[in-house]
Length: 159
Length: 159
DNA sequence: ACCTGAACACCGTTCAAGT
DNA sequence: ACCTGAACACCGTTCAAGT
Image 1 (tube, chains in turn cyan, green, yellow, purple):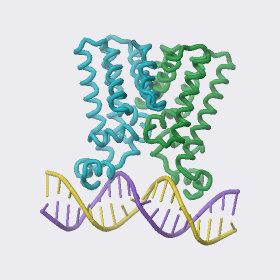
Image 2 (tube, rainbow over the protein chains, first blue to last red):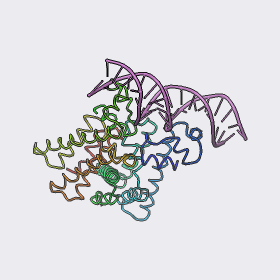
Image 3 (cartoon, rainbow over the protein chains, first blue to last red):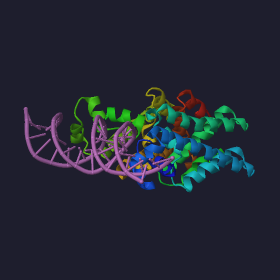
Image 4 (tube, protein in one colour):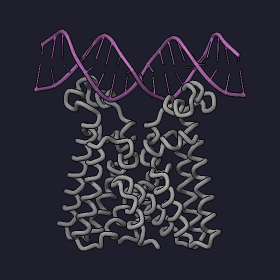
């Protein structure tokens, strides 16, 4: 799953292969199918784990006394700067028309939970939408232009 | 190129195939290679045309007396609602780590020109970054959640 | 319980051959 | 000038076979 997550964040759903992941781990591609019967199941499992960990990291920031918007911004920031990659759900979501229901629903879950958490913390629903969209978009922009500092600059207005 | 643009906006770079596009047009895949020697060249050509048309559409909005931010917002809005798909450069950019220099540079061109045009119209550079990021992110969010109205709600704060 | 090799129809790409 | 069929190494997936 670590290998799959890394590759999906770089290349999206259709860009990663069972054979590559098998090689990363040191087995044959048919062995990966033993654990994850289809590519959809593997991608869905990776997306679910990613979302869970992401939300945990946000909670951790909140426990440290961070403002809700700043907490989300920091976790996006770390995901970009430490890993040097896109948000997994952003990378999958950009080609969501191509995804099976199963994977699409896991990607939806990330966005829906994000909007819910921000709304429950007191933001208007439209503001919650705006914050999440701006964070995903800033991560995308920074990745495209190969300059991580653009994330901070593009999200400064949110703070 | 029309067939390629449609498919890339749905599935990204690695999700579309020469054989599909050939079938869309009514020829064999080897014939597509006659006009575009590689997948990279085809994607780069599609991205360049998309960017040119997008900027033209923005200029058309501006000629109609629209505010600069509202002009960009309207063109994104139409690209989402009329076509029911992602921004081509957003779809490609989300997996930009996977792209060859040639395609990546065309995607970069979209984002760089966007930031430039917004800056030249009087916005601070960070504001230009924020506007473009928010528009791309809102388009992504609306696509993932399969609700085009979320684009308007998520970008209302820009107006 | 976990892994493998071989097979299937798919992919980008090349190329000799056709009009 | 434009198209094609056949070939190559790749892909997801299946399955019988191994430990």
